[in-house]
Figure (cartoon, rainbow, N blue to C red):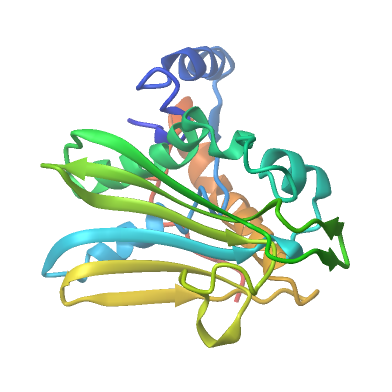
Length: 254
């Protein structure tokens, strides 16, 4: 059994994982941690889609999102760094953060695909706001401050990025027009892109009752956790990862 969401601090995350596994063993309980990204958009979905491929040169899991829609001012400004100077590195973009969170997803995909990685690489690019904007939820973001970032966390095999988790994140739709955008004029999307035979791209756009893709994404994260409860309770005591569970469905929801 592997639980890759807790890997990355010391390579295998043992200082985080071992106390939790010990508590689970003592209490006869199991724990499963998930979200959307990291979560189902980066683990089970790419693995599922890989099963209809004849050959894979690269598999990429991608989020493109406008964080002006995410009404969490403290996280958006201080954790993610929008509206902060570009000479500051926000915690979300620390190498340790990228490895622990998204590097863990790359390792999960590698495990699911039977791939041995040579290394994990990070590529980060940031752009300043070209104008001052005023968002309805979080107020003013000044020109010249961080307005967009793009990162890739790459699982490397023989010098090539074979498994990639990519984020393209803006606070203003007009910034970084040369970077990829969501399809069909949407303000956020998730995608799995498989380069191979055949090449295909599966894009997901989420729509919640509030109209916010952020709210809809949160709902899917909750849905996966709730629907996984029977399987997690049936699992042996310990930490349970996405590769340890059976297929989670919406059984009983229709």
